[in-house]
Amino acid sequence: MNDEASTAKGMAARESTTQRVELCHISELRESRAQGFDPFSEGRASLFVVKKDSSLYAYRDRCPHYGTTPLPWKKNEYLDKAGDVIVCAAHGARFDVTTGICISGPCLGESLSAIALHVRRDGQLLADVHT
Image 1 (tube, rainbow, N blue to C red):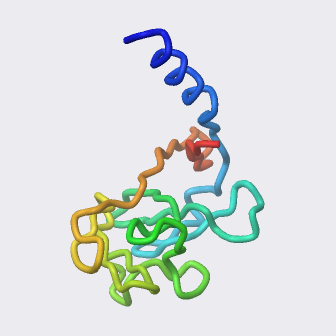
Image 2 (cartoon, one colour; image 1 turned 135 degrees about the vertical axis):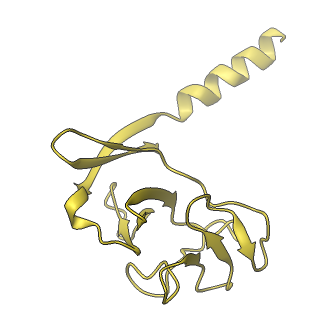
């Protein structure tokens, strides 16, 4: 790698940092439901967590079909009625809860951006978010 490429790569790494933020206590999450969170007080959810079969999955609240479109049609309504798939209310895209991959709709095969989760011993749920 030449010096110019190395410098550009280093600048990009410094511009995007990961911050671990508290979301909620895991007891607050309901099975086969999703909950949005606004860890940076932006006025709307920027990420959401789904509890499915006692496992937790987190994604950025943005449809890959059009990157700035939030998924739910109203607060915390990320899943279909049965709680089986994530749905983009704007485009009708449907995403697998466990992988975030679009299984039908205009962005077939594309994926939601996954967010790493951590559970502290006290049951507090934390997420790694890029700033």
